[in-house]
Length: 474
Image (cartoon, rainbow, N blue to C red; front, side, top):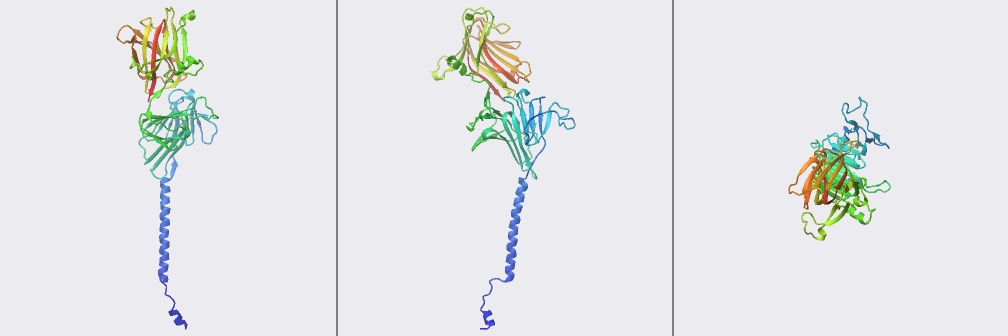
């Protein structure tokens, strides 16, 4: 068979060489388009996701001393002091200021005073006020970032380790997504919506040390706006005028109304426990005050006791399981000298944040030798006395006394004498004492309550007090 016949029997190619070349070029072209599309998509995502740190935050101290800051990567804190005039961002102002950058740690000391002693003002005009109550505030300005090329996102985070802070977030933000969060001990985190007002308090465990590693108590409250508290896989939403209180890693409880009971042990349990065990721990301390240094032992016969009684709303009958603990203050006999007995609680409470501070109690006067009080407040079968200060620990200590005494008439009268408010009450009837201290002439501006005393003073008396409360609202 010759070469010509052999070539006639070879299979013909399915596609021509020219078409094959075009197909190869087409595949490479499509592949290049896919690669370029993926690269473009990645570039677009990076374009939108690119973040930058925004400068302009400022720390403002409202007091001369007691505010400290710690720079990133520094091992020690420094007292905030006024910068020289050319560098002072608050030249000519009372506040002492310092530019803040992410990573700065701010601390306030209890000696700084009551109320907000310092503020952090962020670039968007968000205002974070720092108190010095408890052991002082410890907060880290962690992150303030915004989208580098767009108005897509703003991310702000702070870490609050201790103390009390109020967060007033700016409302009108130019960014589509705004994330404000505060990281707290034990894995808790709070997410806050812009335009709201929030407070967070981290209370160190009593007598805790780094070695003990005891968990603090955490309070998160919402004045306006809304917030979400997270822990592990748990999420709890808070609306306006709601709060939650967390202890350790127990998780987040259900929200409750944002009110604070400032009196510890208002049921007098510690006093009752000391009847059987004199060394039992108690939030209350009993005391007595002599009317004369020559009083005999038999004349010093005033007593404080805790008894069970019916709710004042149903005083005539109640089941045993519905009874309340009642504080009873008694002195009997034909006495010739005044004698005071009572209980006191060292409150050490910064109340500057409370716009309402309501003192309530049910009071019943069963006996009193004298029908009218003297000008100095003696012979009051029930006295509520608040020891307070206005702004600073260095301020002079003040006292406001509410004196309740019996009258034979049916009208309930009220009069003032100095810093004592007198109220005349009918005998034998339960009376609901209800006073908003923020409406009181003397206490409306007080930032600090040091001691609450409840006592009787006079010749002889029998008084009962139950359902005590000192409630703060923001």
